[in-house]
Structure formats: C-alpha cells, structure tokens
Image (cartoon, rainbow, N blue to C red):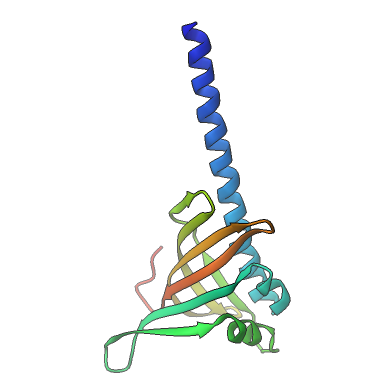
Length: 152
C-alpha cells in the first residue's frame, strides 16, 4: 500500500512539473515570437502575440537625472516595427525568473538591444502574459533602459 501511495505521489508531482514546464515553454514561445517579429520587421507576427489591451512602459532616467516612466501604445510599437528601417532591431534576452499561476505568467529577462550589429542599450524586460484559447498573449511589458552596467 505504501508503495502505491508513493508511486501516486511521484506521478502527481511529475505531472505538475511537466505541466509547469509546458506552460513555461508556451510563455517563452510567445516572447520569442515577439523578438523574431522585431528582427523580421513583421508587425502582423508581432501583433499575433499581443493581447488587445496590451500596455508597454519604460522606466528610464531623463536628462535631468530623474527617473521617469513612459507609456507607448501597442499599435504604435507594431507600426514602428513594421515600418521599413535600415538596421535590424535585435533584442537579445536571457530568461530569468518565470512564474506561472493558472492563466497568468510573469517573466523577468535581462536584455541587450542592438541596431544591426551595434549595441544600443540594455536593461531588464518584465513581461506579463495571459493564457488564452489561442495560446499565451502578452498583456504588459515594462522595461528599464540604460547604456551601461548591463546585467550579464
């Protein structure tokens, strides 16, 4: 009897771990699709991973040295990505902490942003995503931006 209970407990933990890994893979897939769209300049692909009410914000330091927050619309961002530009927008992230609770996920990811091969800025992206019938959709992105002291 003890062996059966132990086996059942192991199976439940394994199933929960597999479900969590599968959800994390889905979250990463949506985020990776966003960055692929940026590199390709494909606004349609970009919008495919955005929720309708998606919000973009950035925390940075202004010329006076004060911390400020700026908000951009998802449509303006997609338009900028889809507008022809000379250099590839190449944001390279390292997945940090991924937390999932049911249909909500959050991701912390340090990044470096390049225009073509030239380093432009770095910081941390924080994503919030929701699970929909069509997969994980990005509902919120906030990032920091700076030119140095990049997180490795």
